[in-house]
Image (cartoon, rainbow, N blue to C red; front, side, top):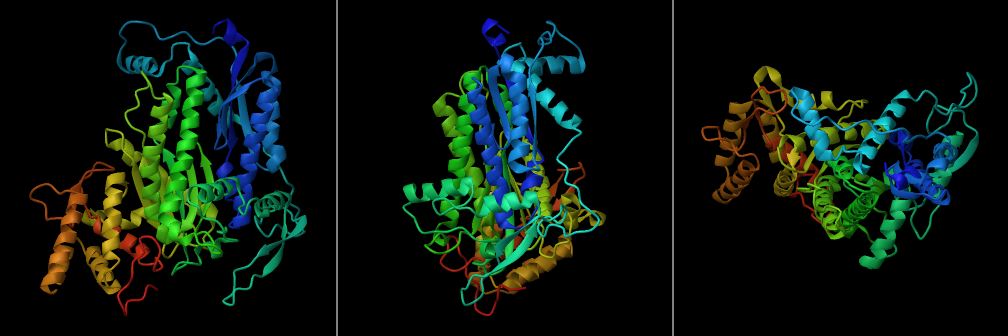
Length: 566
């Protein structure tokens, strides 16, 4: 460090298990309140750091990086940790401060094996004693401190007494009122429940409104919608039942999106100013991408007096969490990822944050979508969405070039689990060497998948079910059954189906000699070659598209006599 750096040190912090805190309950006011409390913590962090004579370089999504005077750093770290506990009663934060001399740089000259690879990686990232090196060491110390944390807020639960009606874990201490689903005549009723101190604070925060919207990100969207789109009078849903109530079937989707290698982009910042510039471009670009996607996809549902078919849970840097009516989910996820690539990339270039030496080839994102009945416990839905996001990120990294990726999971008849892999294994037929899915998809493939699903949604539902059942019987049997089904159609339908199959074949091109667009050989995953198909993914998304109410953006209409109910 130089002389000026010795007077100011870096301070890094990260909230612990904040997603578990937000999704502890299935109550929408509780989720909204949990998110709002965490945003309030971030505001207090900024205020406290600035009051201590420091500056905030990044603060979003529960994580923060600051510069503070060295003599005030320990006291500031302790104060920032207290902010989360005192504001939320249950959430905690881990904060660390850099101290001591930096380790020496890697020795010059060639090394062998892994030592040489690590030395080159350090050179590319800037591990030379500069700002990037300091941040990397501080983040490593933060991860170590989070793993070593032993204490957490404790609420004694007696063997007798009433438990909280919301979380079911802590003792109830207060009574609150929450809305119940609207009846056919449009009346709104409420019920009284007993809640613990943590749930009481979340509830009180989640039911308070400002400018017609509750929750920080919802308020920002409402203002943006009024200013940029001229739409006013819209309102938020009171609960999850009302959120999904406008659809034909009561399914809820949780969308979890995250930028790819954003940590690497931030780690290559050569100065505090560059780090701050990149974080601002990232935050503003992500928020604009979310707002544009919601307006474009759900725009026709944002009518005066009608509840929004979504809830913005979090926009933290490059991290986005949304609850949305299921029939919007895939289209919204695709629009969100596309907007993230455009908006964040444009703002990084405009701000000069991705300038010389940044090695930013493209800004990409990964997205996981999990769909289940509205009553499904959200803590399990969140775990499934997190795992699906990891699967999408793995697909993005496997391409060998910057590429966005998306995947989805639909629990039509859900089991109470938060394990993603066993549910996806239901599509695999290892004994017969084929799999009934091609997920995850790149963003370009996901867009093509959406168009195919919209086309298939206009078929009779019996047609989609017949083809799905044929795929279950295996490669050759399904090819014969589907081709025979097409051959028996009138000439006009045969032409339409031929065009559909051509589009399906372009989605996952099969090498010469393989049996056309229905199936293709793939060696992804564990390295074993197996047959895969994208058609069942198209048919599942078509079922979601068919739920869309007439007149909404992208709405599809079922043919007479083919209801959309199970």
